[in-house]
Image 1 (tube, rainbow, N blue to C red):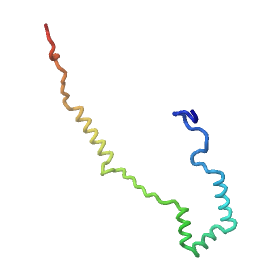
Image 2: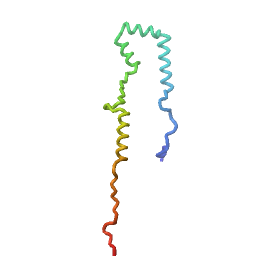
Image 3: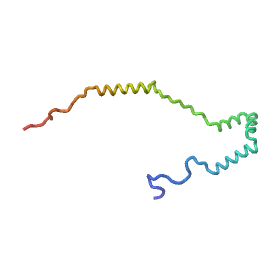
Image 4: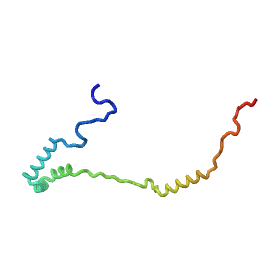
Length: 113
């Protein structure tokens, strides 16, 4: 049997969401070249003026896509207050209803000798 036995948690390895050091180093190098050698914002302005399509493609990659989410609390027009009033009415009706006693008074098919 190799590895961990079933039911035991996984231990060791990189933590979820951690950035590898090589990836971080590459990103830092690109950031340094962009700001120190190309001019940062001035360079982006130059690209926007000379090649708008390239600028828009860069912009689309940098800006996160918008997630449209709408939460409808009153699903199908039901309000919590009305639902609670209806539930209280049902509970009251249950407590006031007649309970039918179906307990036999004498056992059936019992011989008495």
